[in-house]
View 1 (cartoon, one colour):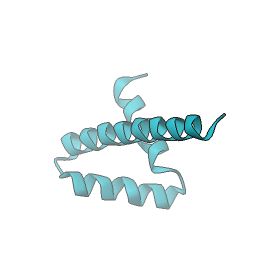
View 2: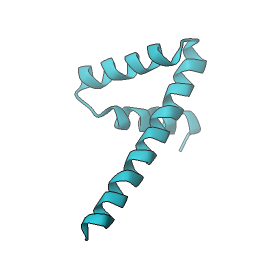
View 3: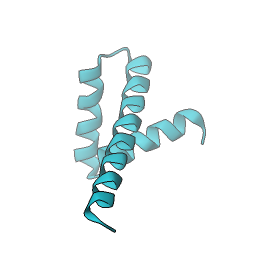
View 4: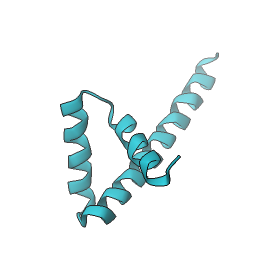
Length: 68
C-alpha cells in the first residue's frame, strides 16, 4: 500500500467514525433531552470508565437503536 493509499484509508475511516459518533450523539440528545456537549461528555466518560474506544460505544448504541 502506498503512502497516498494509506492516507486515503485513514481519512475514510476518520469520516466513518465521525459519522457514527454524530449519530450516537443525536440518539442520546433525543432520548435524554440534553445538548451535544452533555451527550459527548457522557460518551467520553463511559469510554474511559469501560476502557473502550468511544467509537465502539457509539457503534453499539447505533446498533441497539436500529436493531441491527
